[in-house]
Image (tube, rainbow, N blue to C red; front, side, top):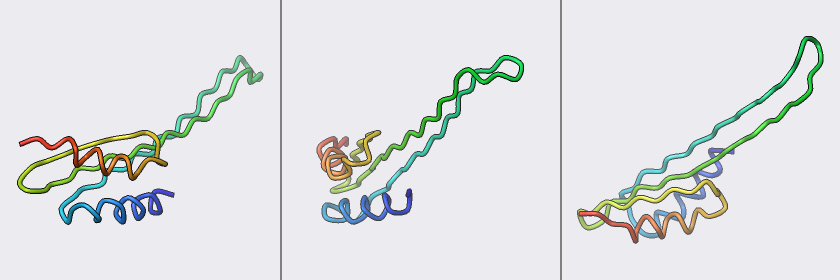
Length: 84
């Protein structure tokens, strides 16, 4: 899953710059509540995020989203948030 996301992000960000860094985060949380031998609550949560850092014209831009369906938006935002 992360490999496919990184490939998609790389394809998108390479349209704008040759110098970039892609950061992917995957977090899995399992929450259980039990008393003695009785399981009363179970919850599994998976969180995925992507960050893109881009360097262009000696400036640095960065953007992050926890919505991996918005890779194109993250790439564009990283360009719009240049800092000198």
